[in-house]
Image 1 (cartoon, rainbow, N blue to C red):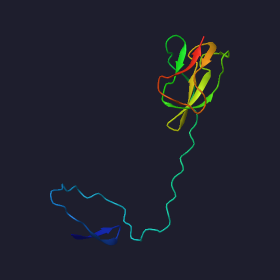
Image 2: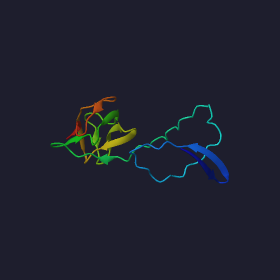
Image 3: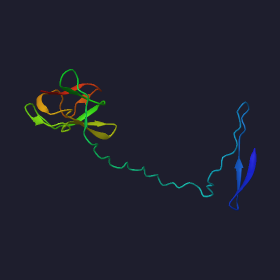
Image 4: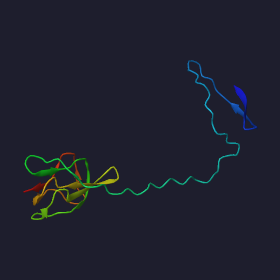
Length: 132
């Protein structure tokens, strides 16, 4: 079916196929494109950089362990065994969904063991650091 459409004083001839058994929706206004499409390739948008999140305490595992709050990849380990930490000090920085998540100490303590290293993939709930 051919239709003639006028938009903002400009006339466009369009061809429409009507399929049997299909429900016909009311026509939606669309922007006309009177000129042929450009042959230049489109430049994809560059995503904006993502800022690191504020450290949030991770729930403790059995005893004084600190677990991964989300699945991701370890970007940095900020502590080593024997380090004294205060509540909310960052222990491990994870990357999840292109965002940095700081996993923080839930309370004051001394790092007993670090169970991960930079570049390692971790699952949600995986033990990262023991606090004593």
